[in-house]
Length: 224
Length: 224
DNA sequence: CCTTTTTTTGATACTCGTTTTCATTTTTGT
DNA sequence: ACAAAAATGAAAACGAGTATCAAAAAAAGG
Image (cartoon, rainbow over all chains, first blue to last red; front, side):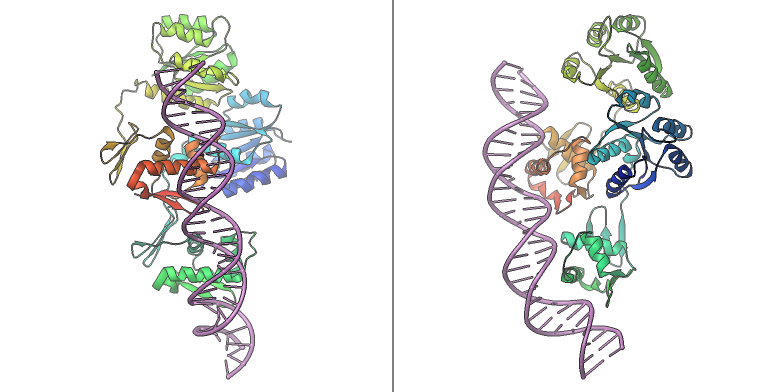
């Protein structure tokens, strides 16, 4: 799990980056200017810092220099078009990559991954995330579910639903929350959809369907 | 202890490279143009030469050609953006790698290490990396794939894709991740690209294509 | 520079899963 | 026991995601 610090004076830009970065599984912290960034770096350790060049208070380069005094966190610089002349300046400070505004968030994400990979942090072997409950084994990493050692053949939605419930086991999950989190924010579906999938999942789980507890008038709970 | 010759007419660039290279434990010598470089090469033996393409007196290619008459020192070329057309030209001269300016010093260092390792001066014997799954053998070191002892003739991308999947076997790999990691962070390709290559790979793998599991709505998983 | 191979793209077919509907049954709380 | 909520079953309509093919484009090799 990577922690990223996004530093830009424009709220909109920060939000944009946050949205995409969170989607990629990064933990995002924001700072509105260089001073703020330096302060946040003292308090927290980040795996990557995205720094805008032009900022009030303390510009990106100065902030980078300041941060580098104590840490070696990889830095990705954002600069407006026309500021390209100071690329070299940035590289002297140990900047890892440059992205010119306006940028494509997708490309930014790709560059982030490239930097993390280069910095070796990405090289660590994936640690599997596996949860076992009685005879049920849920392998989040491999997207594999076994029951008594036998692989279960679940449909995508069954996987998603099971994964979500297992991740949030022993927690009362309302129908609304399930629909929202498993199906997505923009889902306006029928309640029966959930019913049906719970039914299918119970069927797949066989005897262990008893782990899915119905909370009448509320939703469900996965018991472990 | 490696000795590196840095050839560039810009003092600033030389300083930048020197700073990083020294930090990595290299011994750095500088030359300001091609003539100077050729002269320094006659006086001293280097383990690697970093050559800028555009230089007064004698350009990088000519200098490279001149040096290569008497020595076989690995060469890494630096070229400004837009000069990429002469990559081919460089490789014909036996250039070992190319870096486009402006570059990230960290990446440059990585490439330097890669060249030195490749040039065999790193005397330690390579240990082969081989994975066998059923009748399939994947030799990462030799870039060889055999099926029932018979060598498979795969296209470059098929190799890359298979290697990546085998290295990350039993892990659910999203389409996005595959495209990003196998194709590179600057790839904005069509989803069909992946489909097609999966298909080709499956065809090549014949009966063992069953090891490539389709994860609907997610991506693929290589099963071992 | 031309030929061959590889890769990418676009159109199309098709499979499979999802969602919805509806009627019926079961469970649960009061 | 009654009413409300949930489960069940089956089936139809629907849609998204994937496979496949052929052709174009790009890259590699001679």
